[in-house]
Length: 211
Image (cartoon, rainbow, N blue to C red; front, side):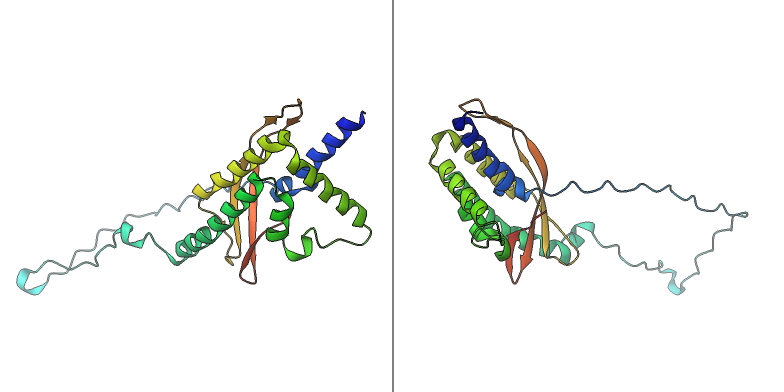
């Protein structure tokens, strides 16, 4: 393989393999298991309707008013979801701005959990981490990579229209995000990818949750 092709391949790997974008995708959730409906037992005899007792004065019997479904639409769970969405929209805008400029390292430093940021280097991975950061910096300076950064920024911005799905504890928010297939100027193809993107809240701060 020519050195130039190898370097460019390393750039692609850095952003869609080791880097941020493929990092955010989670495995597809398992499909729910369908259960057979259980038929209600058929009564052996049909009971006669119970007559309504008469009310003195001929007044009609009062019934409990039925609540208008519209008045019960906003529940505490929905309020939590809307609050999380408002917080995450600010983060998504910031991530998209940095991604559009090619600042992948900036996004990682700010929105990955503290123990997974570029500054946190596992023992024995110092050289690999340094190489990855150098490659990402080269990508940022390469005009041919701009369509990839722009597509990633637009994919992030598109999930702002979604209402995230919160877990029971309210500290994980899941979006469905799609990255379109791209062919860059030098002929390198980047495949399409669709899947869940999960944010996790720790100590009052939302982070991108790892796989």
